[in-house]
Length: 137
Image (cartoon, rainbow, N blue to C red; front, side):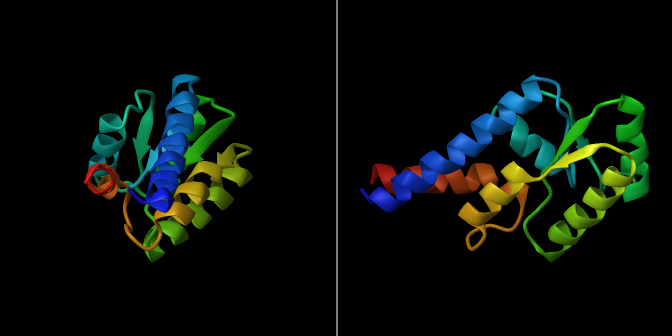
């Protein structure tokens, strides 16, 4: 069993645990689409998860939806590809203008851990399953 892989798995699980805890405290999480929501649910995130790319919704629509919720902070958890990074940057600026704190800490941590292996949130469950299988072999 690779110590490096085990440490990586532990770090990823720690980020996901922190995400679930923040969500349970009432901090909404913003993802790109429905499959991302499904992936987070499968990983134990039970709180409010909003999508920004479903039903023709624009980033402005998403920011308005978040403003209506009256929350002081949201967690941005978009994909790790170019579009996800651009979307995160754009949403971050829009939320800051609306006086809502955009939390990207967990997204940055997870991105640094999986950047070379996966590009999207919806792939997380399969990636963790594969990682676990490698460690069990």
